Image (cartoon, rainbow, N blue to C red; front, top):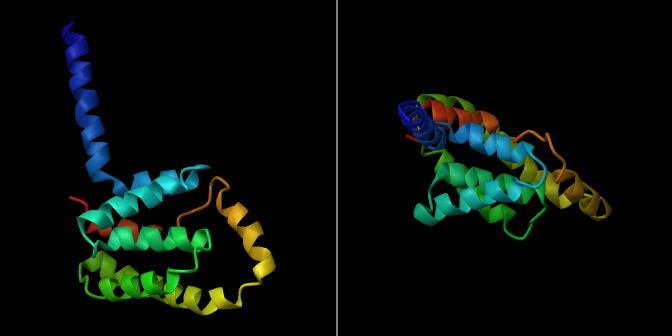
Amino acid sequence: MKKLVITLSVLTVSSVNAQTVDFYANVTNLWAQAGYKSNVLEIAEQRLAANTNDIAGLILKFEYQVAFFETASISNLAQRVLSVGETITSANFAREFPVYAEDVRTTLAVLPLYPPGEIATDKAKALRPNKRLVPRKVIEALRDDGYFD
């Protein structure tokens, strides 16, 4: 009985730490699994419901919209990502964000040129497993800066 109680205590502490400490691992793993990208969007929307300027939520929602060609609101969301991201001065994020910001700007320039006939095919590709989350470095930088603590 004593062994069971200790095991349950360790498991409880481990699950709490996994939920709070490694947001990065959670969203990158969900993104890589087939069928779980909508879970990443849900996480982003929950964060944004709590704080409309949550940079992690903005970035993840933007990446979801790009992956699934939800073009109606990409431009506005990209501008929010850029404007909010530029206000964050934590060391790791400030180092990684300019590279990501350039990716966002490039995406905005390229999306209008995307061949309409290829959109359906590429939307289907977005559902494939083992796709890497594009902004993983900025999300990791946020984690390293203590943003999720």
